[in-house]
Length: 130
Image (tube, rainbow, N blue to C red; front, side):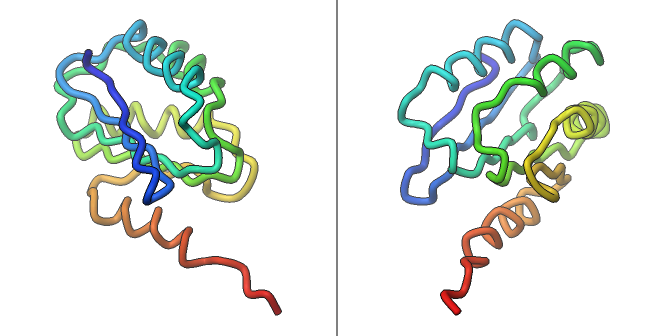
C-alpha cells in the first residue's frame, strides 16, 4: 500500500507516510482506515511524511474532497513534510481546502526537522494554571 499510518501513543501522534505512486483510491482507503481505527485519539497530532512519494495522481477536485474528511480534532496540529515541488504544491492545495478550528492547525514543511519542532511546540505550550 503506498500510504500507511502508525500510531505513536507515547508521543500522542499519528505518523502517516507514503511511498511510490499515490492515487485517489489509495488516499481514500487510508482515510477510511483511519476513521474506523478506534485507537486513534482525535486529539493526537499527525505527521504526514511525503518524502518517499515518487508521484501523486490527484486532481484539484480530489484534493478538495480529501480535505473534507475529519479524522482529528479541529485543534490538533498536523504537519505535512513535502520536500519535492510537486508534493509540496499538492500539500499546499490540501492545506488551502482544509478548514481548521483555530489558527494554523495544519502546516506544510519542506523538512522533517522543522515539522517536528512545530508539532512538538504544541506539547510545550500547555496552559499555565494561573
